[in-house]
Image (cartoon, rainbow, N blue to C red):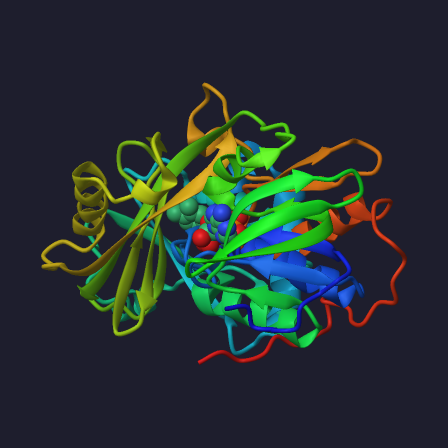
Length: 397
Ligand SMILES: Cc1cc2nc3c(=O)[nH]c(=O)nc-3n(C[C@H](O)[C@H](O)[C@H](O)COP(=O)(O)OP(=O)(O)OC[C@H]3O[C@@H](n4cnc5c(N)ncnc54)[C@H](O)[C@@H]3O)c2cc1C
């Protein structure tokens, strides 16, 4: 059942498909800008990728290696905004980077990257990185000391991704958006001046109409696009799986950024609930996004990293998670591919269809504003109700 019952006779300004962070973000920004919005999610808020992330609200220190300065700067700005408007959902934390004799990235390189990261974040005093004095090393319980040369600590932020997504959906509703969940979009037909969209709500079929359709179905976006008439353009994208382990043991009390011996990737080990969260991986994925599952190789890979840095711990796995990144299709390694959001729209000048592919949890608000900018010529003038940069997000239990 939809959460607002009244039958509409006029088309919505926008219909948004997918209640992950991007869909809820677009619905919230559109409602704040005064538009009438319907947001449809087939399972629950954040049920897809948006509950399987590394739960970081960050600029992405590792993206500096690929020169993605624009993305890092934008994400750090968004981190600042989210810390302000949602302190109950986004909290700052210190991340520790241990450097050993065999670590590929040398201390001077780290100092350089961390300085740049700090500058891009606006040079806030409290966000300055530091080197941990040797006297403090024993506080990092269980961390291997063999060959340990230095430990850097820098400031970033964490979140509960599912609750953040639910909070953005609740904010959209409070601004007047109609939420339909669970509601699966099964087809959409362009009638010349608006879309006729069919929703399946627990076996009941309902039709609504909207001037603009925004496809925020994440890894399912191309599947959703294939049910539309006319069929919109589908960019060349690749799905890359990222897996996490939720560990009931060891229960660590610090955040770690760990270089994986061998491939040099970064893996995070974070406190999570009463245990820890360990991830992630980058495994090319094909098949239906519904079938994303951690593979035995991914599990072994993550446990090897844990054992390397925290030898002797006997991990206990409480849960396994796998999510899918939507990245540009390319022969280069996933690590080197852009993490910028990709927006597809048609027709060019006055789009009636916009699709959001990829992007970051952190940048959901900035992405939503880009979508509205693209849509500005297609929608009637409305009076804005709020600014999402200063509107506090509601708390979610
Ligand atoms: C392993 C991993 C770790 C990550 N870590 C971070 C991180 O730490 N920080 C960060 O900023 N970003 C991170 N990201 C990126 C971020 O998580 C994703 O970019 C973001 O969650 C994608 O959100 P989305 O809304 O596009 O997709 P999704 O969250 O997948 O949402 C799509 C939604 O569409 C719904 N849907 C599908 N078909 C239909 C239909 N027909 N009708 C209605 N609904 C439909 C699905 O149920 C789903 O809920 C990570 C990504 C991965 C994969």
